Amino acid sequence: MKLMKKLIAALAFVPMLAIAAEATFPLDTAPRRTTDMAALQNGAKLFVNYCLNCHSASAMRYNRLRDIGLTDEQIRDNLLFTSDKVGDLMTIAMSRRDAATWFGAAPPDLSVIARAKSSHDGPGADWLYTYLRTFYKDDTRELGWNNLVFPNVGMPHAMWELQGIREAVFEEVKDPHNPNATIEKFVGFRQVRPGTMTPLDFDHATADLVAYLEWMAEPAQNKRKQLGVIVLLFLFGFCVLTWLLNKTYWKDIK
Image (cartoon, rainbow, N blue to C red; front, top):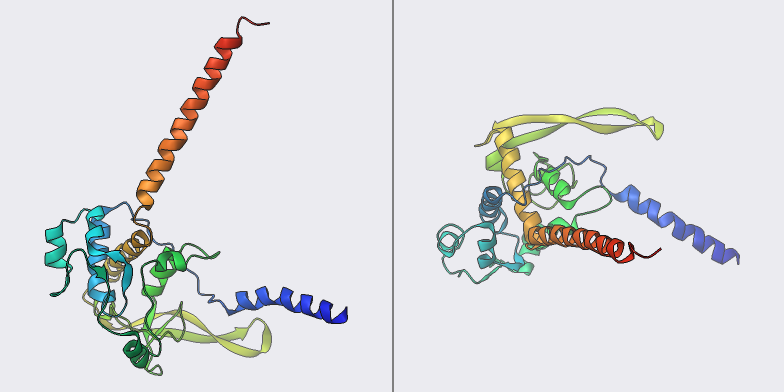
């Protein structure tokens, strides 16, 4: 009985450990642009140019980009590599073994990354939007980069030329859980080298990329939502007609 009580107490403590292990950096709210065709098209271009070199999207075919307003010719001329075809899956030539050797771990497939990152802290789009905008230069890391949302991440800043090179500024403050210790608190970024985009333009570009990742995780989501509205309107109208029919049927009966 004592052993059982100890086991129950230990299991009750596990969720607390899981919560404590999660990143505590606050997430910014990503602009919702999954119905903006221009934003999705720009996001698709950014995805192919900056993400598809290392990350695959093996559940998505190039020709599905017709759903965001692109023609086969536009896909072929702007988004395909030489040997790819419009009907091909979005895969990469790099093997998982080589990727694990170079980066320490194979880069994950991004087909449903926006859904995979959803949690009680917020939608996966918010996590991705904040993550992609909080890279900073860190010479102590093997690849030279670190991230506030994902500390000690094994991924370089793929879009550093657009955002430029930044350093994170930390200051020592008292640990609220231990008055005799101090912790480092993030206070801002220091721009070391400007990028080809202004900070505002980079935020917009990142929002477009995140919108595309969110759309790619469920390409039918916009049609599903539209169909849901139509179904609810139909049910509402059907209920009204049913009520009127019932009222007419029983009006002469007392």
